[in-house]
Amino acid sequence: MNVVVCVKQIPDPAAPQSLDASHNLDRSGKLILDEADTYGVEMALQLVDKAGSGEVTVVSMGSAADVAGLRNALAMGAAKAVIVSDDGLRGTDSLGTAKVLAAVIRRDMPDLILCATESSDGYTGTTPVQLAELLGLPSVTFAKSVVVEGGSLKVDRQTEAGYDEVTAPLPALVTVTAGVVEPRYASFKGIMAAKNKPVEVLSVADLGLEGSVGAAGARQEITDVVRAESRTAGEKHVDEGDGAEKIVAFLESIKVL
Amino acid sequence: MAITSLWVVVEPSNGSLTTTSLELLSHARSLTSSVSAITWGEGSSFAAQAGEYGATTLYDVGALDGSLPGVPVASAIAQLVVNAGAPDAILIPTSYDGRDIAGRLSARLDRPVLTNATGLADEGGLVTEHPVFGGTQTVKARFTAEGPGLIVVRAKSFAAESAGGPTAAVVAAPAGDTASTGAARIANSHVEERTGPKLEDAAVVVSGGRGLGEADKYAMIEEAARLLNGAPGASRAIVDAGWVPYSYQVGQTGKTVKPTVYIACGISGATQHMVGMKGSKNIVAINKDADAPIFQIADFGIVGDVHKVLPALIEALRARS
Image 1 (tube, one colour):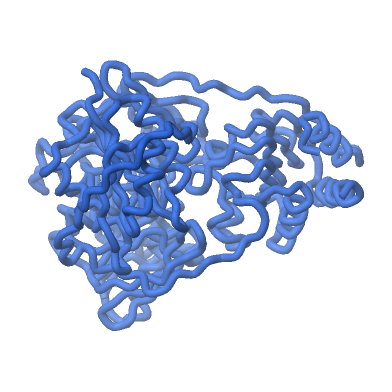
Image 2 (cartoon, chains in turn orange, yellow; image 1 turned 135 degrees about the vertical axis):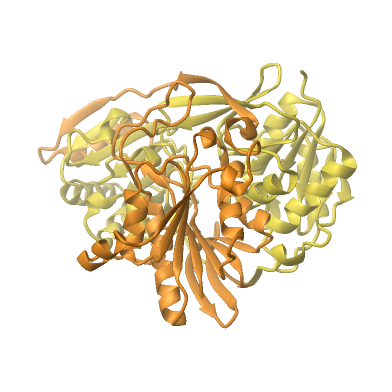
């Protein structure tokens, strides 16, 4: 069983973030593997392991100047990585991203495609389903458990009220929530092995997508960025055994009690 | 360019349209007099409600026979765009199924989608607003090419207000052949029982985060919420850790709440959490780190150990009840 995991290298969420002059997220600093993607990588490794054959490929779009994040996925156990890196991709929207990923994945269709529910930087959350539609595959989003039996998939999918048991034939695309599995730490052996695993770098022209991706293909623009109405910090007290009492008094003052 | 018409995807849930759906209908009718809605399931039973909130036509995809809504609803809308003419934009609620519909429809129509919208205005064309960086800045955006643009809107962005409109005319909008893409089927649905008010409707929300230390301590959050007639919530960190179900999560990926008071216990205030609760009328924070970002937006902060302050608070609330 072959599994593709779509991953993204993002600016460290713990660091302050900003928009550049063209209103794109500033990605000039160090990039890391989105933590949200580590769950998909782990799930894929476990499914391939259980199937007894096949491999995990990670597919990404973004600058290949730094591929430490992809190496991290390879160190966890993925067999190879493909990244589409091209200046012409700046300003690409979610649909354009899905077109790029679809063009890569179509070259060698896997049995299963795993994605995070959304990235931790742009959090658009539509790319996986757009990708499934472009590839003509069924999709199950917000999976909290994934089981493959024979040629089909059993997924517990989050709902507003609880969860649904969903079945789908393979090939299919699934988005996994954080917590679906516990991502492994790369071992020293894994880290060493990752250095020699293939990372294929492709351009937009390699995929024949000139004109349909990038800022022009996005067909949307940011017209303005304004400071949001901000809340100001109110009272702050250090608890000296009277913290609870003070909260009760505050709740009384706003008539909640 | 004036806004000629808008379509709104309205989601059924337990025999009614969801609150977010009604919020979108209410706002759509303030932008144009031509508002149509799209729904599924027992579609015709929602005609009165859809009309009341401003839709003149209700397109009904009909029974889905166990399919997840994303594929059939998007397929039906794509055909409507061809047959009934494209609206300026299609508004879709931010929800599990709403995002599926938006993604499928975007790829099918080859039209862009803007997500996480919290504002929508007519400024010589539709302009959307999106909170970024934990809601400290707002990005305004617009579509630059032929419509319909797809806009996925977050809950509680607008008020749901009845317009007292007449029952919407129901028009069948079948999904047609969804071939291989529609092959996912719901075999069983499970409801996780919760007592007390719903998280998104509660006047008081008591939320816990990683500062609680361990899963067992979440019981304190539930008890404090119960005593205040409120709902318990959670940060992403403890949902990811498996302490509480996903349905408790407040934030970017979880629920948007705007209670009278939000009490954050052991939550540092990651941007992705704050975007889901900074619209609360009052915010109370208990955290041992005096520099935690949550204090920057809290009206009332206690710098202290949640394991001491929370039990004392529960004790005080019990004494009053």
